[in-house]
Length: 117
Length: 111
Image (cartoon, rainbow over all chains, first blue to last red; front, side):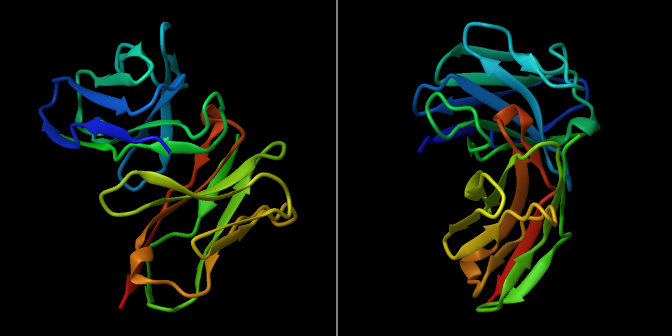
């Protein structure tokens, strides 16, 4: 199994500021995924972080708002830019359970709970 | 598009009670179905899965059967424990990018 560490675990931010969330995995993985869980709602995939290339964003999410870095096979960051209260959510990092696989079986980090005032 | 509808919570049960959390889905094709669980203060964990019709996934005393005729994947456990208190998510998909989650059901088990 993979151990995924996220930082920060929670933060309170002011409107208009940006925050970077870090995700560290204890093994090398090809794909890393970033999800958002808004209050009382289900998880939504923001983007797939690819090592050595730009992230692949899902419909409704753009790079200017959620820039992603993937400098190596064990680490990724997600930045939430120019935050508004609507960005208050839990942001989750995840990786596939099997090396080289891409199924719905994922490991998740504990999440980063952001509150924007 | 694909969608998952879960039983609304919160659900509160006494220890040793029978648990059912309903999950129905709408999908094109024949996706895999999953139950994830999120214990307090932890990340989501895969609880069980089923990859085709009539498959039964099971783990830690929990079971769910992939019912194509009723498009359902209800989660059941015969006797819940306090340690089962968590949020349960039903999900479907064939790949990580195609994974669709339900809204989650909060379960609290009282001693």
